[in-house]
Image 1 (spheres, rainbow, N blue to C red):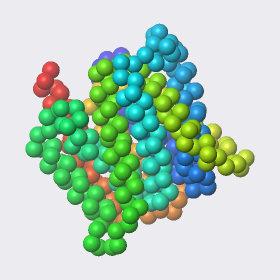
Image 2: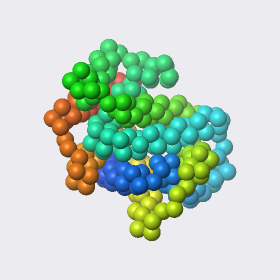
Image 3: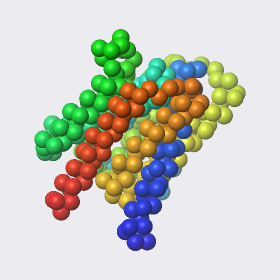
Length: 293
């Protein structure tokens, strides 16, 4: 296949992947409203860990080679951070709904850009700092401090965004040291161990019909991660990453259609500002990378 067709296929696959993740968020929101969030994430991670084992077993050198890390403690911390971030994100879906939570969570690329200097030693110019500032103005539009009583629950998706941004930065960092298969292995296995230690004490009996929904959630999670791997096999990250914002669109649609959530004009305006600022930071990063080649 030509480079252009690979790029196009990668973009289309990224859009499909964001739809899968949005559906996953919808199932997570429903189940977490009935059962402890930690229990829902624990069951999902058991399936994900099995998926990781199956994938890494087929990688060069098998599981033993994938598990061999030069920075094992950092890899374990990454895996623990991601699973805890997922718990916080799902909690925000229950507290605020998919629309509001995703609108706030969309600021995570801006947090990555802001922290890339101190964490990775990357240069952050004034244009990207300006985009970060504009993006957080968008967050203020969504939160509306001063116009209504500020809701403490609105901080939860912001915390999730910060945790995911740190996870992304650490993933970049370990990517300079370990193989991608190693990072993937530790993401699943460390996360599964941590969430099991914490979540096994929150176990509650699950209704038979909800086991079916849990099965769909587990399969959609594994499918989404597999598709994301294929996305980055086909196309450059800078080309496909902006299309990850489609998850906000799909998740908001699911929130409105299935959970009777509403799209307020200020939420739409704020989300538009945040996404626009995020797209600008992606464009700047891609342009800087091209100039350095």
